[in-house]
Image 1 (tube, rainbow, N blue to C red):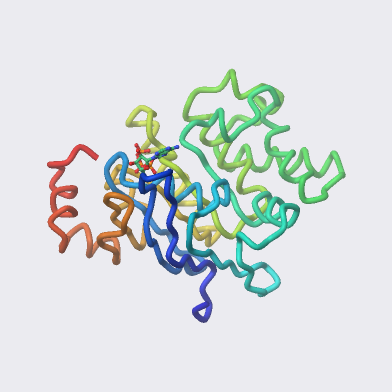
Image 2 (image 1 turned 90 degrees about the horizontal axis):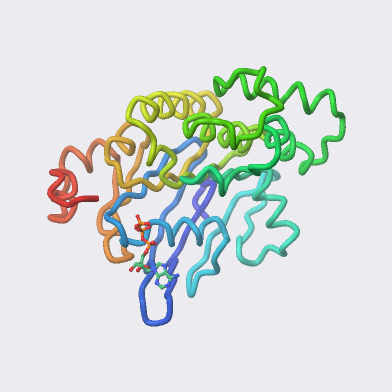
Length: 258
Ligand SMILES: Nc1ncnc2c1ncn2[C@@H]1O[C@H](COP(=O)(O)OP(=O)(O)OP(=O)(O)O)[C@@H](O)[C@H]1O
C-alpha cells in the first residue's frame, strides 16, 4: 500500500452472471480526501460502492485498508466480527434512501446513540448528551430527540443519517447519492452541511453521484465510470473543466442524461 494511503482498491471486478457490474477498478484514497464516482445510470457506481462497503464480495480484486492502529488489512479477509466493528466505528455509509440507513421505528436520539453503544458506550447520560450535540450539529431541533424519523422531512432524515454516521468519528464515509430526491433548496443546504463537516472532521469520503455539480462542490478527485470501467480520473476541476475522454465531454456538456 502506498505510504500514507487510507484505502487501496486493486482490480475490483463484480460480475452478475455474464453481466459486468464493475470491472478492474483500482484507486488509492488518502485521509481527508473526497473522491467522487460519477457516470450514467448503469455505469457501475452502486456496484462499486456495494463492493467497497463489503456488502458484496467482488468476483476479483482486493481492497486494503489502514486500520486505526496503523495495520493494513485486506477487507475481504477480515472475519465477520472485525468487519462489522470496522463498519460501525471507523466507516460510515450514508444512503440515498434514509429509510435504509436509519432505524425508522427508533427515536432520533436512539438512532445516534445506537452507534455509540455499538462501540461500547454504556453511560446513558453521556450517550444522550452526544446525541443532543450531534442533532444540533446537523441542525435538527434538539426538542425532536424523542421523535421517530418517520415524522421527519426528507432533508431532516438525511441530516439524521449524517449524525448517526459521524458520532463515532469515522475516518471514511461512503455516500450514495446523498442529496438526490430532495428539493433543490434542501439539497443546497445539505451539501453545505456535508462540505463543512467533511472539512472540519478531515473525513475521507467516497461519494457516488450522477450530479456533476455535487461532485464539483464536494470532491477533490473524480472517477468517471462507463460500462463498469473507470474511463477517466483526475483532479475534479481538471476533469470537469478539461475532460479528455469523449464520453466525459458528453457528460460534462449534459448531452447525456446522467
Ligand atoms: N443484481 C444485479 N443483477 C444483474 N445485473 C445487475 C445487478 N445489479 C446491477 N446490475 C448491472 O450492473 C451494471 C451496473 O449497475 P449499477 O447499478 O452498479 O450502476 P449505477 O451506475 O449505480 O446505476 P444507477 O445510478 O442507476 O444506480 C448495470 O449493467 C446493471 O444492469
